[in-house]
Image (cartoon, rainbow over all chains, first blue to last red):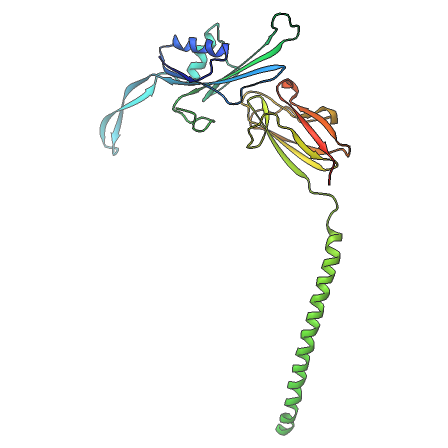
Length: 147
Length: 151
């Protein structure tokens, strides 16, 4: 799998878990990980937001059609071996990942929250990690960031 | 008959000319009166209350933003006594948000993605500060409303 993390700071334990999971999936050809600008931290929380752009492997499939409605021809259609919906099912079955908190046909979203209490502190802070997974090369809500 | 008619014609023209001049003067006087009336009456018809200000907030990536803004949970400055209509639009898919100004006991309903709600606020006359939050995500989605004395 071709992994591009040049635009990722490396923050996010769950993001790393997802990367590890993708590396075990044959259907995934490439993965790009990016920080989202809205990542921020405060006294009470640390908010990490990452986006993963997944490129699925493709296969060629012969499709029979009629040229001008008369002559039978065979066309070759290139299609991905997996969809975001299929990916949701695969990730849901993984114990380390589980089902997303939100999913639609173009995006999977995981929201992980835990309270971190460093040694010698009583209250600690909340760590929130928001990860969104999109299919690469497909127009997404974040214009210009796909592909 | 025709001679009489000829004699009367110059008088009629003179009368018409005189009437035209008097009509023009009257029209000018009426226009002036209308201007004076409008100058006096228009301010009386205008409301002394200022127009309602609209502030659009969007929620995305677990934060409030001004529409088109990039600063998370921005400070909102309001004039004391003004009327404000907050419009909240949730752009976070899969996460419900709301807008609550608990010090003023105001809150919108929880909004699903792409839903919006409005909150009408009559800002108190006393300057001060209030906190606005998203109730279920108050640790991360929290900003300040500054009420300053109006002009």
